[in-house]
Length: 391
Image (cartoon, rainbow, N blue to C red; front, side, top):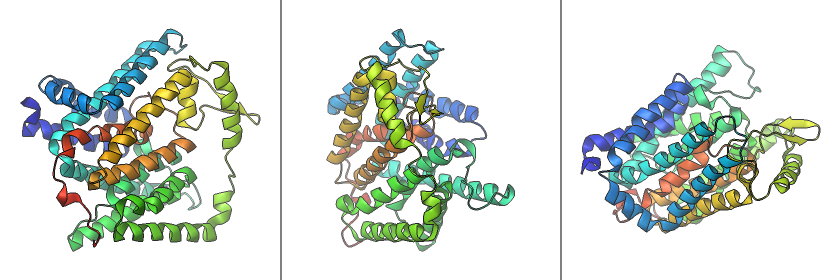
């Protein structure tokens, strides 16, 4: 089969690494998007016909997940009928992007779970380099004070969304320590760069989501490494509160409770249809205007109504179900932590579910896509990736 050829696997594998790392390292967002077309959308479309039997098998093994995704995309497309979006055709094209993105993962499953973990680690290592370059450029080259919120390079320039991307990389690397001594030093250096980025971004939502996930991780990893990381996360959080409590607390709740109350009233105006896909809106609270709800679920409810939000919740819970079934592998346990992290992150910011690929995709469609890898890799003996209790 064409999709089983080594060159096809390499093409798709490079596309996954591009998606992860080029969001920061590509010279511009336009080049990042063009690279996704070349390295991910195009090979998926070319290989889809030869892989049709594998795709059908994947759908049969995950009918609830795929069914809920298709229903969500269909409802989103239908909402364009009443939406006041300026470019309905563009919004429809973005839905196709999402579908092609998700179709790539059953094809990537041919690489095996161990190789996918390696690709995630490579992408995360490249993001660690981007984090280091961001810190040097912002505080060294630009000479910004250390208390200024870090703005990264590329598309991780937004302090909050950039921190969500970098936090994802932390989780992809943290539970895959290499065995060679030299590589272990590089692994620690990469984690230090990623952690420093999250800290300097001053994104409390990203930091809280990451800390809670790492603290909870021993519940499903059940090994010494995860317990050590959990204790270190608690200690680091305590030291941060002791050293810079005023800095952490000075922004208060960032109007999140007031925004939430205003958003509930907005949802009540159009509870069943929402405003429609791509409809612009702003949230008025405490005399201020905000361009989104700062919460993924309420954002979906405003755009797509309660039916749309319910469909997104179904997608998210069916994703969890697939991950839980694969918890016997290291890949499954890493994804479980990633799902918890993404769920928490969506509560604090992230209000773009159907936009072009961007930082928000790391905590929305990426977890869904990675869960779609599992049927093709579940039967694989992932013994090389399991963490023994004595590790």
